[in-house]
Image (cartoon, rainbow, N blue to C red; front, side):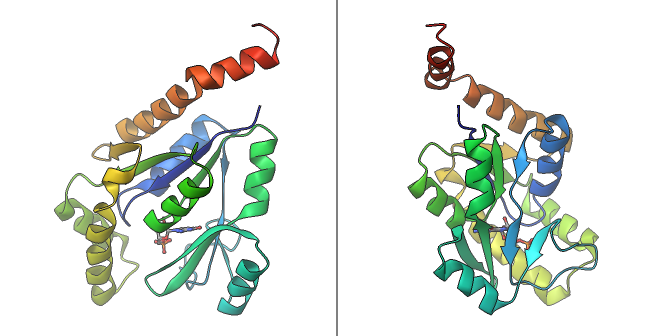
Length: 200
Ligand code: 5GP
């Protein structure tokens, strides 16, 4: 039985990363797809942990070779999901989670309509601004532009299967985990397993 593909999006500072961390802690068999990006590495980031940091040439070459499941240009940089590891994990029966922006979600959903999508919403834009400022990783100009992008990104929330409002991290992570569990209990999924096991 193939694994399930979950897509999580949400604006910068909404807490997607922290929610995904909690999901991975809770279920060590869950596979988080590490994206490739042309954006410069931040100080706290490590190549191969948050992202694979690659040049624009390398990124475009990978697209040309059909190695990307999806990709998008966001804030002047390319971001994309390497297809190989995702396919491999799904085939091996592992659930996979992608952290992608909305264009990435639309591409994934078009190719794999059975992917389950969740949008992480900040409790308010004032709170989002506070979180972005607290990160102290960006200049004032970048913060302004990130906030504008965030508002833009939130206009796509209605196209997702689920919305998680991240007011309290533990509650938000529990909601995301509940969505994953419920999706795996869908009758179609369960019938598949039961038939494979010859229980039915
Ligand atoms: P950041 O620069 O803050 O790490 O990420 C910026 C945006 O890029 C976030 O909304 C994040 O979800 C998105 N992103 C990260 N990896 C990918 C990817 O592989 N594909 C797409 N389409 N978006 C991504």
